[in-house]
Length: 134
Ligand code: 5GP
Ligand code: ZN
Image (cartoon, rainbow, N blue to C red; front, side, top):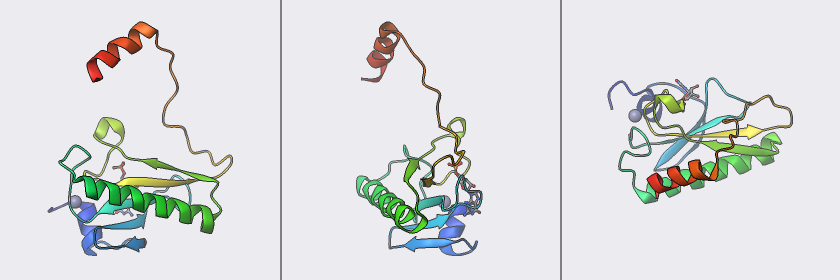
């Protein structure tokens, strides 16, 4: 894809701090990390987001790679845990429109903000949404 920054990172046209590569994807450090070690899992194939007819096998591969990187963050960076985050659409925080998964190592009191503030809908409100989604 022309003008896609992640396609350019995959091809090597733009340099990046690559920590993993196989035939299907790469993992590279985010240039503006939420915490040290914040890694992006990027498929070599261009897909805009998760709804872009993504093959089941590719999705499984990306999540398996996220697990490998998360385990490394725990073993080698002494992270106590990690978040796996995947944004779809600008309203959801997606700024690069090439499918990717964030793996963010977590440390006690690291200041990384939670993604949402829990709300308390009524049973009727939950039921209305359930009917729309099921
Ligand atoms: P999104 O907001 O689309 O879920 O995530 C895109 C991520 O890509 C952001 O966290 C941003 O910091 C990162 N990013 C943007 N441009 C570059 C780049 O040129 N190199 C690297 N390594 N990361 C980038
Ligand atoms: Zn791309």
